[in-house]
Amino acid sequence: MKSRSWLLHLLIFCLSIFEFGVAALAENSSDEAPVRIVQLIQGNQFKRMYPDALTGLLESVSAQTTLNVDPDPLVIESFDDPSIFKHPFIYINYSDRQDWQLTESEKQALKRYIERGGFIFIDAGISASFLGTQNARSQGQSFAEWRVRPDLAELFKEIVPETSFRPLPRSHGLFRSFHVGLPDSSLLPDTVREFVVNEKWPQGSYSSMGLDVDGRLAVLAMPVIAMGWGRTEVGKWTRSIGFRIRESAEGLSDRLSEAYASGEPFEVTREDGRTDIIYTQNQAMASWVQEAGGDWRVFQYHYSQEISDYAHIFYTQLGVNIVVYAFTH
Image (cartoon, rainbow, N blue to C red):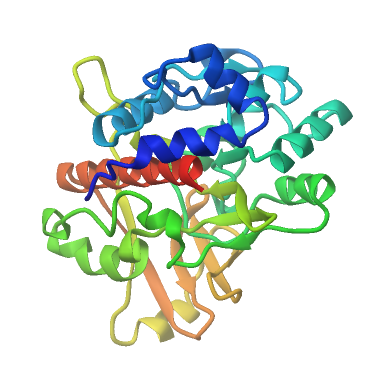
């Protein structure tokens, strides 16, 4: 984990080419003036997802890097708020907008924002269908799928019809813009370590879909990661996180191929574009998977303090990388 001493200078340069960036810097005048991120929350702010998450992440950015970031985001209710053009980063949790049927003025504002260099991160912009649509369930866990939510795909196809969402390769610079690789895997229990290192988060990467405009990443969508950012006033993590891993055993494929699932099967898109089939039990709890290559594996759920702490470290590390990448590319 290396700090980049030149990061703040590069940030100022990048901001200077963003629309109204020069004016915004002139208003602040001081090199030490903090950069502010915009957060869209439509409706009651007290009902938003993970209310302390973004502030927790921005505090981590300030503590770990040379970026001077305001920990209090600028909250807006609509994308046609003119203040977005003074700030080159918009964060939104998918569920913090009641619907994604944007007005024409919002679509035009987003189009202009993207064309002028703005960056948009849609947290929980990817959510496997078996997780359901209820916020508590769909955002209480993440699942690695390489397909954005259909309404987002349709919306941005209308805004920037010349491009579409594509999977970010594991080698993408976003995953090593500040932190490189996974946190120390020796912190993990033996029961999950191999799967986490080799399949879940290889090289510190994460399932991500990106929209490139004029050769740069303009819109980023991921399964929810904000659940790993929030802290209490005394510095403790606000929620516990477990791991879902895939396990196999001799003869398991034969048994699972004939097993009964009380829930309906769901298709999920893999990194290579092929499809896995998820079989569920007990209100959309993933139980086993028929993989595209023909193998069957069962899902095992693991919970411990070590696992939860590791997940928080990784999600924070990933969030820091996103912020740093957005401000330096």
